Amino acid sequence: MSKTELELKSVLLNLAKEINSKVKGKKKPMLGSDASDYGKFVFSIDSFFRSTHFPEKMTYEDIGYKVVVASCSDVIAAGGKPSGINISMGVDKKTSPRKLRKIYLGIGEACQELGMYILKGDTKKAYELSITIACTGILYGKIVGRHAVEKGDLLYISDTVGKSAIGLIYMLNQTDILEEIKPEKSFLQECLDAFTRPRAKKTYGKLISKFATSSCDVSDGLFHSLMLLPKNGLGVELQKIPVDEELENLDINLLKKLLSIGEDYCYVFTIKEKMKNKMEEYAKKLGIRSLQIGKIVEEKELKINWQGQEYHIPLKEICGYDNFNSYI
Image (cartoon, rainbow, N blue to C red):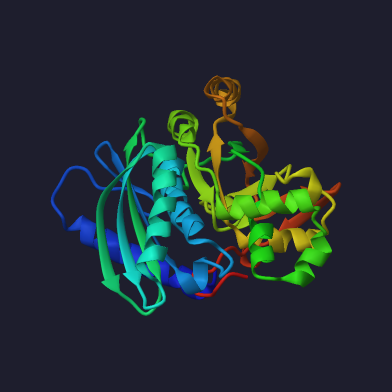
């Protein structure tokens, strides 16, 4: 994420808080995370553009499927169960009714898997294909945002990361990076599937709402997402980097690049150390993964262990997906 994007988000967040402070009402929505609540409901919204989100090799069915999963991911990470979506589309001259039908077939697949309804739609003429999805969900309990962490909190993730980024690299024909990674054919197919058809597991909303002190999805890159959680001078010690065994021999610099690309729609969250056993037992009961990968520490940095070596990464060197630039 670039300095420009961070500054713009900070300005807009402060303006939104100022506006909300002037609205009469006992309950103020939570701002500053990727989803916000009002009463028992939780909301998220995401916009996607042909030029920055959908490689040319990506099918229109996959585009439709992925935008739904990406938007619902923020609701799940906040401790909610996705229930419906509103869709706004900008359609250019290249996007025929046949292509729109394929997009909606993909949207329909994702909605059926997640048990959601399409609530409303809107379509306008545009200079390029764009899709905005507003997802509405119902909270399982409390909403979970960022920053409510303390030193010693344990860090968990719902799945391994990195495969989706390799899928994107392949679609963009970034052959120099692929030559460094040297993925086997079967693993490369897994990576392509991870990028085009990420799976949102709504059950995690139940786990996160019950146990997490903070949470977010990993769509903007693991290292960047991790550093969104602590505040007040705290940092993260990443004791284990959750990658598949095919990536365990990567050079540290290549690993950092790979995990800065993002596109991993899984969830990273913190819990109190005393809740470790209860949370892990509950995850098993739900039939979902919970991988302990680190903890919150005093030092305001990201400390990682990789291939037996310890690395200290200052905050200014941590980057993730940049919404003001395309892809990599």
